[in-house]
Length: 295
Image (cartoon, rainbow, N blue to C red):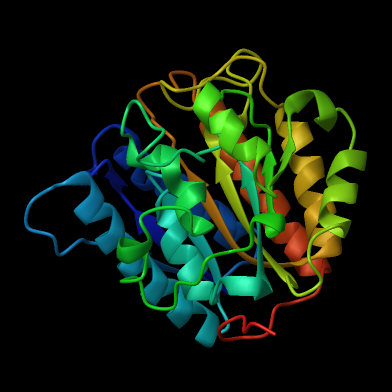
């Protein structure tokens, strides 16, 4: 069974820009999943924050996401999160238990590895992986029940190609693995990276920001889409490699702006990739219910 968790927020605002994406994807995805034989339960996240400040909303959303993910796993349901922004990943990781037991496969045109000290834009979403790995916003992240930083050595960034200089320096000093588009022509780099993950990280959370896709050959997922991205088949092959080597604990599909996807090609690619992940999970090992404990 699948728990479809809808997170319709972008930069603190509900159902605008990328915040519309989860609702648009949900409209077609549920029926497709049911036709493929999946039972689907849907939950929608609603923030309790009275004023739409980006940071306050982002971490409140993460707290709700963590609750839903934790509840889904206890009920033996696979958490499939449709999110406007990438910061929702903090809640997913927390709901999974985080820490040494979890690896993250992060598909994105951007590394999201800035910190408040390096970010010129101050865009919180550009810091999501830094928050996940405990580099910044540590006090706010600690308010998300179950959150434990993920090891940098357990993070693989796939399809990343749009980096600023300060962010690149942070990555060079980190233990994060980066597999750019040129290395994804075949699956060997993914195989090596997944096989090299810390042994304690027995489960993997897949985060799929749709702007990892090439905006020319597939279509632009949002206004931040960068050129020279991945084909849908490259993403699919990488997902299958990951599923063959680690247990899939959860999937997020994020950062889809339907206003930019005029031909609906990105939406269709997203549906196909979700199906790929779920098919791969069916043929692979299952993650035990409940949190992923460190050990």
